[in-house]
Amino acid sequence: MRASKTGETPTISSIYAYLNGNIELKADMIPFIAEALNVSEQELFSNADSLRILRKIYARNPLYNKYNHIIELLEYISPKSLETLEKTLLGYKQKTLELSHIIEKI
Picture 1 (cartoon, rainbow, N blue to C red):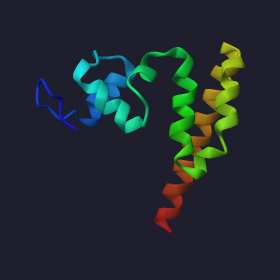
Picture 2: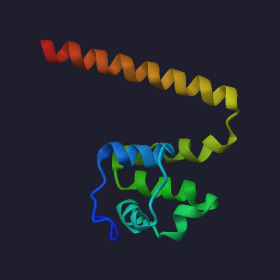
Picture 3: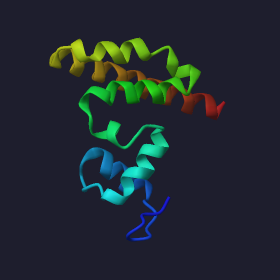
Picture 4: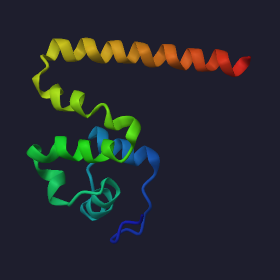
């Protein structure tokens, strides 16, 4: 993937910076992002389509497909509950990584 104007290939860190809003997204990258997500360019700019885009991404992987219902319910969660959910999931992630590290040593 190369930008048509600059000829640059985005680095992993620049992609994360785009996603986090730390740097501006260059317009010539939009077609590549849409293609990678398998959505139209217009869908990237529609709030109504954001959940549908997530569903498309998760539907490609059967492992993630079972979590679609959770994604659909997230719009109803309160900010405090969302914060609690995030902390809980981060805790699970940390414990899983620690367990994986222990298993690797065995």
